[in-house]
Length: 152
Image 1 (cartoon, one colour):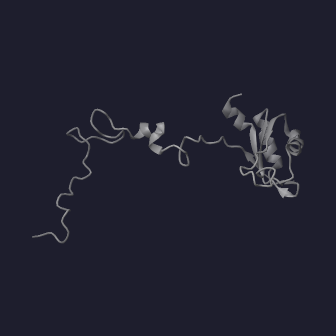
Image 2: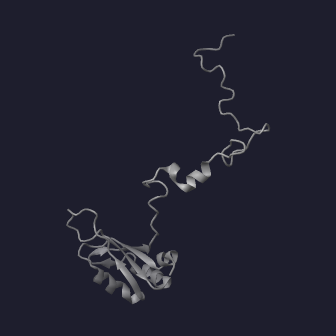
Image 3: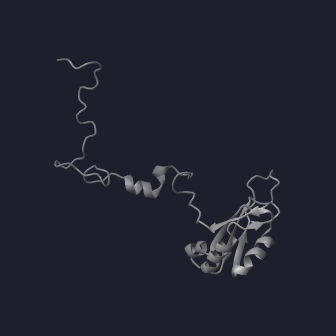
């Protein structure tokens, strides 16, 4: 199964009580279809007394089963808490976009978009002037280095 198809067959289950285990989730979601995997992420901090982070991912064999689980389990009560069950979203790459650990100008997408054109010195998407060079952003600013009113 492709990575995109796996995420379509996976549901996010939020609002879990701290006593919930993978076995509880398996028992609750098995009526909707064959389950491939149940992930119950552990907390990042070792000092935390929580057994999990309060959410889980349940991956089904078939995306139709995931949709049925969402329709039936969203806003239901489970161990005294109301569940939020929705379609899981694929995680963003740690190397792309805001929040990445890589500088924006080192990312390939940004670099390709903002590189200067070798032939006429313009940025991609910027139109050269009739003379073939890029518009000078400083054009028309001559004489503005002097403070005060214009001498007449």
